Image: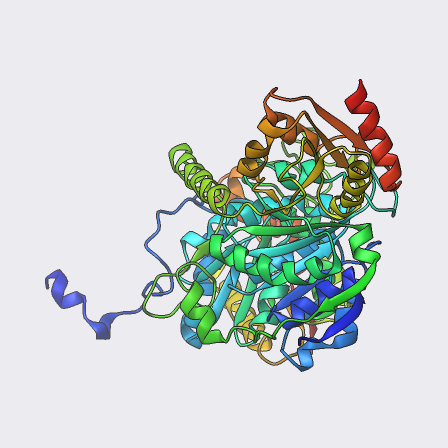
Length: 253
Length: 360
């Protein structure tokens, strides 16, 4: 049997979403961003909304999200994506508008913007990647860095007296009247990827139903920033991050 | 004859925005310009023209909402006063770096810091020389009347879209708060989705049609060569703006031997100084730059040779005078008179200062 006999439509079990571009991968091997990008692309493809979706990329590693998904993109200043999304959705209510933000972007410098966008109940989707570290700038402490976790700016481990406590911002977001769907997911296993994809689809659907803001935290790995292997990073995340950032829906109405 | 209505300068901004087809206003309260958003909320334009009006959680957020709206090819604006404009400068740099059209109104108050709520012109440097980071320029219009406040809104959007560049109306607490009769202009409808698509589809985030790749509105270019090329492109655009958009007015400069240069409300006070001087047989005139960037360099340059001296009069410690000195280039003495912190000089006070300077 030669290769052409194998490559037939009826034998196809998996294909790259046409919403994804043929970009050279800039994320490190083992990084969660690539997986999350892929499932967003699949949701956009399956919902048939490539022409109606506008993404807002953050500052951080995923500033380059716009190089992967073939949709219209705005690149926000650090932490300000929810403000851009607010105006975009209000001026073009027939569009699906989502922000893609890391923990430094959303839970540190952009705390005001995310809290108030969610509190106003903007009909947008927020995808929040929490890998407990600043990846792009070289592995410094993030607002979500765990106590005792070693980073470039907590070389002796995060100390509550010196650095304060890790911020459970998703729990705060769930308290806000403006949010309709708040969930915490992960992408380290096939089952987790499927759950996260379902959550993202639900969030996009919510955004056309005038229900308020949908917020999805994805507890993620940054093996380069954590200075470990991809496999060890998954284990570390399961053993250390999941107990502090428990997975599951916090709000769904 | 067109209808004339008595209104405050700040109210004129709001009425003009609705009238000229503005799509969105995003703001945060700050004295002395809060009437802009108050008037818009009172008028509820979302029920008539469909204009979006939103009170943001901060000036930082306001300017970033403007950033998002501008990405969508919409006519969007904000207004604030000096301390709030400082917060917006990050956003202004991004808007300039992404080549986005928008309008920012600064109703200036005295600084630095929290300063005072009294009128001032002390943000001249911030408005004309940058404010935010990077090599960028903002087109700056200086209104001297409530009519100017009204008319400059539409003009600002015209310029903003012509050059895909932020435009600032640099008013002050005087033109913001004073009431004058304003002649209303014919209403312009908001652009339809089709018109926005036709005008902006090559760069805006309107939703990607099958016919093109996704648009990316960004100011990021990690490659030095690409970044330099983009900067050169920006500078070429600014050169075009400088060549085509300088605006100014003159008052009795034809036979003048002395010149006052003043912008905004100060230019009107200085017209009275001209009358005082001419009563004493001193041939004084006024040059009023209407655009502070681009500065009316050629107009001033042409007036310099006929003058014995020039005086810049400003509500600050001497900011525009640096541009006047640069253009005069040592050909005639250039003096300065200014008041700060909210104090407003009378024509007599300015005339007295002028006489002292020329007798020295």
